[in-house]
Length: 251
Image (cartoon, rainbow, N blue to C red; front, side):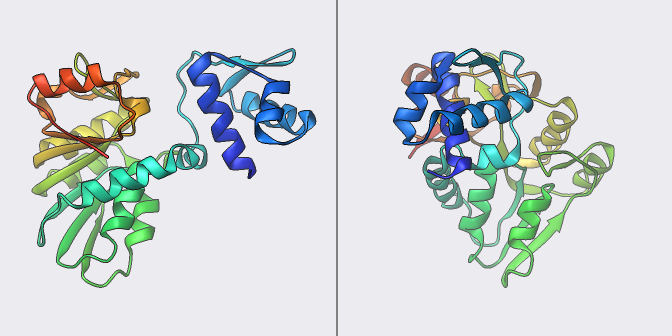
C-alpha cells in the first residue's frame, strides 16, 4: 500500500471509529509499527488527527483535508459518480464546474466529449481540460485557495456574466436541513454564484458527505435539483432528500 493510500485509510478509519491503534493499523496494512507512527505523526502535524500514546484520536475541529489526501479517498466511488454525472450533460451544453476531487473525476469523464462549454474556477480542472479538442474552456479568476479553487469577488463578478445549463457543485456536506455546505466561507459564496447562474444544479458528493454539515452554507436544499452519490450513502438521508423533491442517483 502506497503512503497516500495508507494516509487515506487511516483518516477513513479514525473518522468512522473516532480512534486508531498503531498495532492494529500495522497488522491491517502489512507495514511496521514505525511506519504507522510516522504516518500518524505526519497527519498530526497537519492537524488532521490528534496523536496519542499507541495511536490517535479524531480531530473534531472540522478542518479541510489537503487536496492530495482528498483525491486518494474513495477514488473508485468518485470515479463512478463522475461518470454518472457526465451522462447528464447533453451535447452543446454549457456547464459550471466547481472544484474538488469528485469534480475532477467528472472533468476526466468529459474530456473526450465535443461541443461542450465548461466554466470552472478550479485551476487543476482547467489544466486537465486545457487543449482538449471539441471542448470550450472558460476559467474564472480570483484568489487561489489550497483546494486549487479561485474564489472571491472577482470570481463572482465574472460568473455573473454567464448563463449555465447545469452547475455541478462539489460539497463537504449535504443534509436535508442545511442543504449544501463547505469548510470555507469565501468558497461557499463563489459556489453560490455558480448555483444562481444555472438552470439546473447537480450536487456530486461521495457517501461520506451525505448527512454531514460543515461551516459555511452554499445553498439550501431548495436550490438543488439532483444529487449523484454512491451506494454506501445513508438510506434514510437519501429518502429525506427524495421527499424534498431532489432527484437522487446512486452508483
